[in-house]
Length: 380
Image (cartoon, rainbow, N blue to C red; front, side):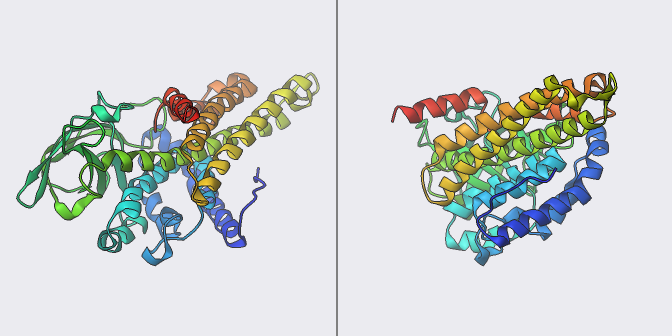
């Protein structure tokens, strides 16, 4: 069903409506078959880029849409409702652009950002390592000073778009200090010495490629370092705050799709002479699902509005990610229950939605890490 949205401007409302139309006409019809085949829809990112989605929250002067984050996130929700893998991919790409957009020099922004947000390039965010996922300070990938810049050596794990991206926003250790010895680099996808592991065989989001990335003394020019040496931790956490809102919006879209599937099925499936949607027990279950979706949407919008107002939103982003992804897991599981035996088959999308929901509680910081972030913010 169409979601009733409160949007700050008529332009924003029109943009969200346009994205919904594109998503339903071009993404939704392809999703099931592509996910079953594990096909990465790279052409979809070029299409979304042409319509401005990849640059929606970035300034107009560099080719972006200049829209508030709450508009971008609601548009992203529409994409995820149609095809979760594409929604997650857009969120990761926009997050990969964030360090350059916020911390890059004017020359870097003017030279590099327009192509990144236009859909001409696909980005990846190379932060996690096998032994340093949530523990960013434990990363071991190193960047040593070289004659023309830096040489990066090490490995990153669980990288969305690994092996397919045109650039990798990469974090590497330039000093011994656990928190202040990390720096941020923009690594071209074709850089010599860069290689990739086989795509991970995942429970869901099979249309989204995830792979390890290996750096064998990969040369990076000094003008491709973002921010000062040692600023990497601060840059990474800033990007993650915004990225968590992206995942919250995607999870909300997925939950909305599952709710729509369940409501539609309950209106058609008959038992004992009437539709199952007429039974009070089913009505209560659907009502709980709807309340979870609405709560998820409200949580990410509150965080986005604080971000747009220039307020600190770290705690709000963690709350939104926690609430929205837990809601997605609950709602998709309940959707399978509503469909009964059919929900357990691949003839209906409910089982795919449930498989896709699980990882939202894990990536961009597990939900246990979100609780830790929230608790730390409460102690300040």
